[in-house]
Amino acid sequence: MDTSLAILVVDDSKVDRTLLANMFSGSYSLLEARSGREALEIMAHEKVDVVVLDIGMEGMDGFEVISAMKADPALAGVPIVVETSEHAHEEASLLAGADDFIVKPFNPVVVRKRVENIVIKHVLERERLQMEVQKNELLASRRASELLFAAEHDSLTGLYNRSAFFRKTAAYLAERPSEDYTVVQFDIERFKVINELYGSEKGDEVLLAIAGALRESVQDIGTYGRMEADRFAMCLPRAYATEKAFEQPLAAALERTGLDRQIVLCYGMYEVVDRSMPVDIMCDRANLALRSIKGNYNEHLALYDGVMHQAFVAERELLDEGGRALLDGQFEPFIQPIFDLSTGKLASAEALVRWRHPAKGLVAPGAFMPFFENNGFIVKLDGYIRESVCKILFRMAELGIECPPVSVNVSRLEFYDPNLCQNLIDLVTRYGIDPSKLRLEITESAYADNMPQLLEAMDELQRFGFTVLMDDFGAGYSSLSMLRDVSVDMIKLDMRFLSHEDEGVQSRERNILQAIIPMAKSLGLPIIAEGVETGGQASFLKKVGCDFVQGYLYARPLPQDEYIALVSDAARGAFAFGEEG
Picture: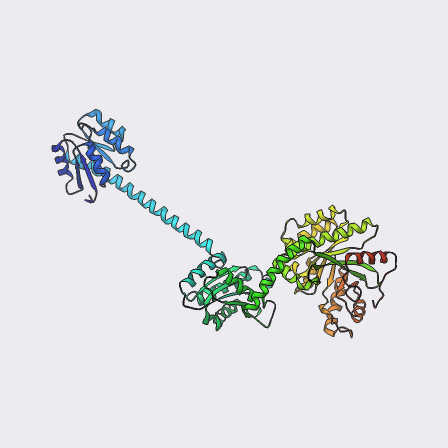
């Protein structure tokens, strides 16, 4: 046996202790106790693997020792072999909790074998339990590592996620206080096009190629992660970033996808100056630089500077001011009439927002709408304008004026709201308005952004009686294919097709319009051309079969009182535009 195992012989007879000690000598490390209390005292301080216990000792007998050991969690598992000369004690000791017994006078062979069997049984069980504990600890550690990895890493690429990138980069910079670093954010220009043309699996392949390139080129010199969607971030030594050394590995990885010529990466960089600045703010500044070149096909990299910061502060102030302005009723709808091109009569109108600022006067949409579209405030503003239009329609009904339909905008962001349809239905119901009087303009880009959910919402709204217009038709990359898939009621033509010169329309533009308009009409879709400013444009539109026109040639957007007066005059036949406006 293993002499590292300790056996405690407890007996008030020195002769018996000596006999047993001689039997176990060389096989165990021996401890001796002359009484039950001494045995408990020894076990409180020494490691004991098995106890050989005289059951009939004076004072504290063996039964009391067994009881005390079983009551102590530290001793309850220690195996006990009792020694007895009375047959009655054999069964009683086993019932009390002993593991086995040996009979006096001792038979050395039997004593050694019985003790050995008990020791082997308990040692093996202890080792099994220890292995089980170690296994469970290993599994728990592995599971904890998996959970930690999942919490810190992007599920597709395995790169650090947004929050982990912030933490790891902060620690990385703190460990290198004397080196100069640059934070870079980059994304793929029009990544959604890749997903739509080639499928999401190909899109994922592109993202994985980028992740692989970052691991190979950045792993040993900086940090990197995936922020969201196709947006990635890196923290690199300034010299490496300045030399744009990261571009070549990324380009090589994208080339292997077979789509390299169709993939354009745009980069925004922020040079780290203040190490106390939170990394998320550094990334915001790199993102501001990135946003400054979005859509600019001649620039693919920008460095953050003070001008961008001032623009960001101005944008934040504009958003804060916009929130107050909405509460104060500073936004109001201006209504621009739409005319039948063949008769010159008023046919419908579009509601456009104006900001009547208490200090700046009437502010045109171009000064604030781009900011509101980027930060999501447009959702609140569109909802406010829609309700304002319903109030105008209700007022006109009370005055007995038959009002033509007025179209209002529905932002692409609103189609992520599961309550959108019900909100629109509740709106016209609340004001008692025929839903066909409140037309809904949805920009063409929205159809590409969230097609399934948008089509479901459109179907519900059209079944209720709303008319849906596709706005900015022709501005996007997939207008023609959309007409096959999207059941709009009307289209509004993007007038970027038309030259603003009065001499007419250039040949390429003419050919495009001559193809689009007949195609739309063959599908039974009325066409509204907006932004018509010259007689030459109007003549050409009429020639190619355009149905309705909207623009400064015919009427500017009007405050609600002026618009109501115009509708009243038109109803009496006192107002109409001829062919040339």
